[in-house]
Length: 491
Image (tube, rainbow, N blue to C red):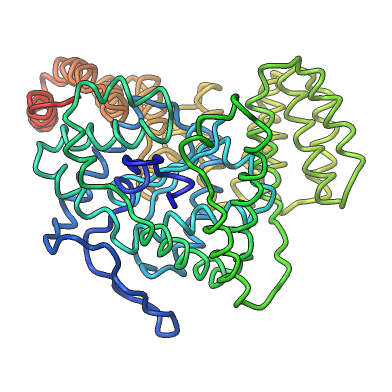
């Protein structure tokens, strides 16, 4: 019984285990929760939380260098909010989890050091309810809170930080994203890590057990976990020799389905409605991934879907239709749909931002900016609205205004590569080359390109030659990057 979502079949079970180790004892367990036994904990050595955080950041940089992550902040916001909702009811409610989306059509999820959890876009599309998607999060969170990765992290932590992060990334991605990791693994001593992470049925059972409980506590349907397992297993029977790689390496055994179903039945049945955000995010991913067939086919399909189901389902189909029309540069019909959706659903930000983007792409910048200003007033806490507005301001030659929102993002959230990129453009436009080069350097560093980051900092140093404070700051950063660059690397 191997982890369906993040574990490699047979002996390597890596993607899951490497990603979900929590390196300190459980804390803040709710009084009414069942205290589960500590299964499979093979070591009493616990590395510091500070080192784990550093390893987590380095791991994330290594992941960004190897696979494409979503830059769509609305998608990223939804996944983070859904993950936070579930994690709040876990055995580590005060723990910070970082959820992100991998642009990959295969059905998978994985986790890394410091509770970095990646969800493939293909998995989001494969789920038929929000509770099913939540079951993936709950299962992964369960592995984190039950400390199933201790030995793997200990082994990796004996290497230099860059080597440890690269090794963990190579092993995890080799499982989660077939074709990414195996070649890289030939260049690393990942076997030492893999020997420490052979996963057990007890780990899987425990993660399922806490996952089912977490689903129920967070208001989702705990029956969704065995339902999702069962549907994927049933689907795998029809592939024959062409079975997708993910279904070869991540099976859902019958016993696991029956075990989770039995546990879920202990909770009172209640119907859990999908959020409209779930429908809209799935629709957005669906339209974005359309490449194989003509866009006209998708447009016709969505027109038909917009005539069926509840009003919410029709609205979601119309939203997808508007995105497809925008993709086909049919801005006028897209505008008509989005204007209607926005007027009928004033509290739904996705309709308003799509409307604003449609106007921008149709070369109507003033109307677009007015709509984004409206969105800022209606949804002041939305990171997506904040960054989309900043981006459109930049494209319309208003860098000073854009910097207000970009610096606000820096103060409120963990910075992402796209934010660093926008900051470098904004400071370039306001004729501040030092800051522009600095943020460009941070952009390259955040995606694991240290040499490119150093080149940008050297340019910043030249531009700041008459400013002692700035020059010293830049020199310190160059020194740090050079130290990391020279550290022994396995990958």
